[in-house]
Amino acid sequence: MKKIIFSLGITCLFLSSCSKTTLQGTQENKGLEKQSFTWNGANIYFLLTDRFNNGDKTNDVNYGRTKKTAKLRGFEGGDFRGIINKIQDNYFSDLGINAIWMNPIVEQIHGDVNEGQGTTYGFHGYWTKDWTAIDKNWGTENELQELISKAHAKGIRIMLDAVINHTGPATDVDTVFPSDWVRLSPQCTYQSYKTTIECTLVENLPDILTESENDVMLPPQLIEKWKKEGRLEKEVGELNLFFAKYNFPKAPKYYIIKWLSDYIRKYGIDGYRVDTVKHTEEEVWKKFAEICQDAFTEYKTNNPTKVLDNNKFFLIGEVYNYTINDAQEFQFPDKKVNYHNNGFDALINFDLRSTQKETFQKVFNRYNNVLQNEMGGKTVMNYITSHDDGSPFDKTRENAWDAGTRLLLTPGISQVYYGDESARPLEIEGAEGDANLRSFMNWDGIKSDKDKKALLLHFQKLGQFRRNHPAVGAGKQKDLQDEPYIFYRNYNNDEVIIALGYSNEQKKIKVADFWKEGTKVKDFYSGTVSTVKDGFVLLNTNFDIVLLEKIK
Image (tube, rainbow, N blue to C red):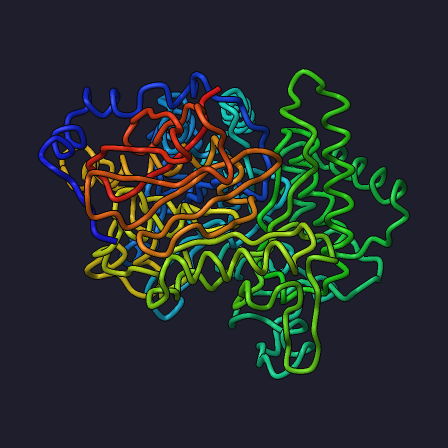
């Protein structure tokens, strides 16, 4: 979509004082009825803790991780304190974010591996050493609690990342779990359901025996570690109570489910994004969902003053290569699986990043049709870039403005990957593979680059509108006009009308079928206020986007 910005618009985009005027009232949304939160219309910010913001330089090096690594394959200092600082600075609130998804925060392997792309540490969080401990590179338990509390105070939910499928790799200082816990071969061939699950994703990534229902002892390395830390008796006691309560065998998957659900019981996190879902039996996820909900209910009962709303615990699954076109069933070569019926409220949608050749109208209608008619109340989470997708919507960031419009106005949940809003580069000289996608957040660029400031403001306007109106992500759509493209969305009486593609300042939008004569409305994008007259809204704005909302 072409940006239509006149001289006045340029001034307002680039001067911070004018930007505040342009967005005035958006925080309180004065004169507008406050809408309740629904996960189906959420605006989620996904960040890698280590790569987002360094708020405490004293925790940058831990566990002897001092080797020089390949480009962007070591720890770089981001931490909980850095996230807390941005929460307090309203960075997320200004973006209209109402949920933050953080990569796994559990203690990672201490050693390094060489993936064929150079020396690498577990900065990304997916190489677990101990599910019961927080990695010191990211912060402390108290800081995690502070982060969650301060996010909740801003109306922002916290979603952590759950890994049950595998442990971290074995290294010189990290021993492999026992053979009744993990398998080291064969590698997955994806020729069938079984060869996708009972296998290792890559060499030296021990696969948890999630099919096992056999009693197993705690891994000796965890016993020894907890002894040194003075908490073995406590951990064993809690495990015994858990297994007795649920009458589970002491199988590996149930140990991990207990450990992950503890983050809900103790800290009150609001959801989990679940890793490598299709590599684990769907029955495991159904049980995981039940235990997570129990833990969430327990937390709410014990902390009534900290409860945000009546939403249940939320689970989003990563079923690699699932798309919205699959609706509720994912096709293995020899079997179909409905993950939505096995604990998940949403799945990550691998489709939007590939819609470059489709018009907004075609994408929005296709998504609306599936979500409203085939999903049975479930939904998908859309993205344009991510931490492990080497084929993003706009790899060179040449169309970051259009990508943001598409992401934030597409039906479903939106996932803003850190730096989408600031055109953080996705191609880094000297980096190999997915390291290109994981550079440090480009804060300096936001401060100094006018184009990045303009892009950030674009994301802020669209994001706040989405946050303020669940109809944007969760509502049912009706097209009103093809050129410019105008459509209406409604969710539980929350109504919006959106127009895209205007090439002139004078805009006349027919609203008679939805809003009565004399209704006061506001174009959130420009801040222009108007009144319905003769069934139309008349606007004079410098932008090609219109985001219409009713004023009480």
